[in-house]
Length: 421
Image (cartoon, one colour):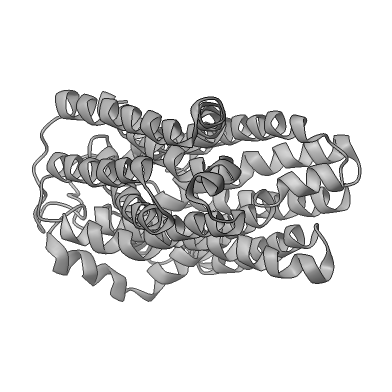
């Protein structure tokens, strides 16, 4: 795997750490800015909303730049927002800082995934996405506890400065070691070709269905993850001090699952998503039913960690085959993923006062079931391609291969992306 893919993971790690930082230091930030914890919670929402809405616009704005130039500009915008957060004198300034960093993070994620895919053979695209997204998984596993530790020990502003240092190191490493890659033209590949070409893929109705799958996968996961802390302490009976350790174990499960899915995503995209969604629904239901049993709760919490956000590489592979590998498509995909976080956590918050702490988990079960339904067109298409062999088999298989080939990919070059089943 090229070094640049690991550099992309480092950049994603620093930005994800900044995203989670506020959630880990809510009381300290509230005291420092003289606002309530609930107001600090809106900073988390602002970051997510900026990723969802602002990210695609910023990604469109840097399409004319070469990939490396775009990444450096996005690093700069993120750094400006993060420094602004570190020196924020009041809540309004902090809110602006979170919008800036959220917007830059989404655009960077799309650009990083796009470049990672460009630097490897088509059959390695899913693995490259998985390696880059290890930065996301490590942000949960290490970024959150490290930033929380720094903030509690040295003050919440120090945590933002620590993220600034990490980001500068990632940016310098990218500047020094990432290769100079030309911006692809419309005839070369789906990874470029200007704004008009990038926007054109969104006329495909199937792309919106594919994006909705990602929203439902992540929404189902975060409907539970957002409330693990109160469920584990108030229902399962764990002490407050043990919850961070359990969440670290959950992050480790994320990392393991992401590595496994990354290796399977290209060749078995739809089977991975189908198996993952069914497993996610079963594990969520088991967690809800066994929440009062400490051992059962932990076992199925870790199981959720293996199949939830870890489906990202397979989701990205499916989106790229339906749309293209360009930064705008990948950024919009990250927006739909973030939308899932917002929907899952928001629906859970609305349900708790009426149906109790475990109700968000059951919402996740429902979202996982809806996610399975969004896979049905692909499953029917795969079944037809397997069974309609006697006549026109070659033509049908060629059509299926063409449908799943990255738009603009040269047939005589490396082998196209593997079929989805």
